Length: 602
Image 1 (cartoon, rainbow, N blue to C red):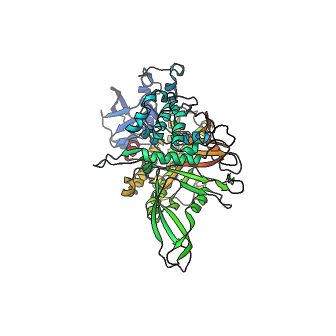
Image 2: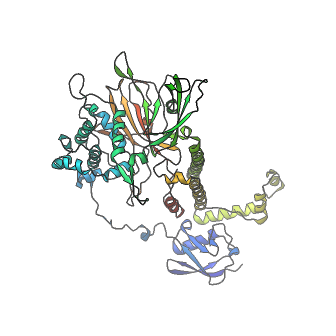
Image 3: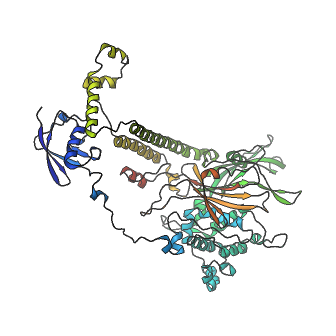
């Protein structure tokens, strides 16, 4: 068959090419390679109906003389494709930066807190709370009331050196704001004097002296956590700009408080009483520990069903009641408290329950919810797991494909040149189209042939997909699943932006205690590292590591270390777990994914 003269346009140039209708798209690309130096795998040839594929039979294109083909792509060694542009900002080395600038660079070690005399309980609590970015942002917008501010104006200069505790602001929220700001400007251990003074002023129990008269006594980190969060609940207010009256509400109520639906039932059958239904707000879940408690879920279930003795109107005397708690609202941030300390009358001390109680990096809180909330969350939770499985299967297939390519390379399959490869593939296609050459070969073929194989044998052609096409199809399938996920969200649930809309949580912080009683021992905190912020302001993927805050000493640890904090002795055991809701993808994120941008895994 005679060749057809065509024109190929590439980067503003026109190349006259003789198109051989008996050849394939792959052979045609090698022909253009000799003219443009663009490798076949880097070429995109646009034809009517789409993009030219390697296996396309050129006779099916119906090319006409002087028809124009558009080719896109650059050679791998093209200098213009690897031009190094001058940095928009002057490069600065770490030794040339100020302490504050170095502390704010990506990947910088965060600041620790100096122990000011049995203050590790406070240090660990503050580090765990600092792992909530929304809290830090809201604190930066906080301003003291006029009466509080006027009382501290005379010594405001001291606060910038961490010395405000000598007599400046007693506003705990303002002190926390200033402390976090100061910590963000250093990588050294910082003395939290101003905040400690504000804490002891607001809650005198933290100013208790040690029994031996030397300094201050050790305190319970959970008590410090509860008092600090309660103070923030009262002071830290946010305005809802979506409402006309712009009423303010508590930041803690939005992001850290949940609601219980309570049911009080009398245990005695003779009591003719209807169960009493009510509602309560909670700022943390308790995990009660008994002799048979082995896992966090078991301890939470125990705490959600408690026995209470109170007067029964129908019986005219005291009776035992069962109070059942079910969650009707899950907050975005959920602290869980291991109730390890209890009062021993024989020693008049707070003793510690040493029992090992395991926990997971991901918490499914759906089972603790009301039936109404379960109906909203279960379809979303199950769909998330489907999307995750699809993402995992995709990743496994990609790794398997990469491994096969490396094996082929080791076996010498890549030793053939480009032209030889094309000829070898062409020869294999012809052999498959002709079928077995002998009756023996025919007998060795499988007896059953699928419809697809039969169609292939009849037409003499096969459909092949490039790696990019396969990956694009998989990405499109995952994107479709994520859009289906968003469609499952109840409108009322979607409107509550401070609530958990999936029922799933990921572990972000841990406060630990080492020792045998609350009045002694040592507290530390672990906070999961966030992804680095890029030049565009977006947060990148996390590396799975954690920061360990041991007062002013800060080090990096692996995730395996966190799973070993389940107790079982006097070593470090988890006292408070801080969970953050696993969030749904936003419409904006899906639009970016659809355009080939950054993909966020579920």
